[in-house]
Image (cartoon, rainbow, N blue to C red; front, top):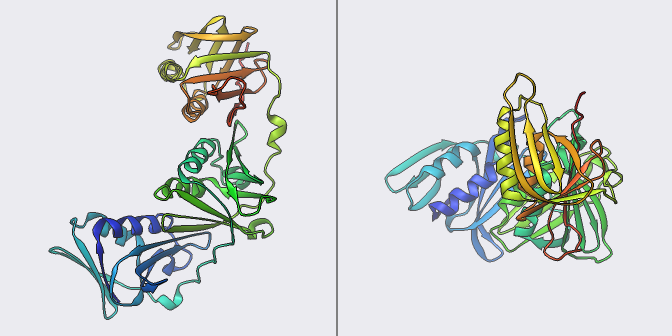
Length: 379
C-alpha cells in the first residue's frame, strides 16, 4: 500500500475515526484503525475504519494511490502522529510488516496488526431520512445535557429518538431534569414511525462532528431491543452504534400543561448572577429564587456560612413564587435554551418547573423544553 495526501485532510480523518477506540480493548486489534487505499466508485481514496463492537466509525478521503492495499495500525498513535506532522504532503507506505509515515523531514515507522483478525464492520442500515447537520447538532447538544451518567441505569444514559413523519423528538433525563427538543426532517417514508434509545455521548460526539456536510443521513434498523442499530452519515463520514436496551421513562406525563406563574429574565444576566451567587453555595446546597412583580432575588448560603444575594429585573405573569434549584442543573438549562430571554414556567414551589426560550413569535410553541426538579427547603 502506498498513498499521498495533505496533512490536515489525513489528520482530521484519522482523529475522527480513532476518537471512539477503546483504551482497554477486549481484543487487541480493536485499538487499530483500518486503512484501505484504492479506487472506490471511480475515485482514488483511502477509507479509514474503527470499531469496538458497539460503535463503528468510517471516513473516506481523496488521495493519490500508488499501490492499493489494506493495513491495520494503532489508531490513537497514528492520530497523535498525523496531528503533529508539518503542514505538508504526507506519504503512507507499507514496508514489509511495518508502515512508514513520511512528511517533510519527519519519518515514523509503525508496527502493523493482522488485518485478518479485524472484525467485520456492521452494515449501515437503510437510510430513514435526512436532517440539516447544524440544526441536528444544536438539537442533540440541547438534549444530551440532561442525560444520566450512571452506567448502572443504562436507559437513562441515552437520548430517546422518536420519529413521527416529519418530526423528530429527542428526549433525555437523569431523573432530576428532563430535556425535550423537537425538530423537522425529511423522511424517506412520510408515514415513518420509529423509536430508538441512542447512547447520549455517542450521539452528541457524532452530531457535533458531522457538521462539515450540509445534511446528515439517519439510518435506523428495526432490530428488537439492544440488537437494533442506528447509523449517521455526512461529509464523507459514517458512524453506527448499537441501541440501548431498557424502558425509557414515560416522560410526557411529567410535562405540566398549565402554570400559575410565568417569569421572563435576561438569560445572560441570569447566568452571570447564578454563577456569582452560587459561589457561596456548598456542594449540593440549593440556590434560592424569589420571583415577584418586576424582580428576581437570588440567594445562597445560610446561617453562619458565607451568604450571597443578588437582585435582577424580571417580568412576572401570575403569582409570586419562591423556589430552589441545584445551580448546576439550572445553568445547564440556561446554557441550552439558545435565546436572549429565559422564560420560566411554574405551578408550585414543590412541582417541576419548565425552562424555555422566549419564542420569536408570541404564542408559538417552544421547540425546546427543559424540566427541572426543585429542591425542597427544610424548615
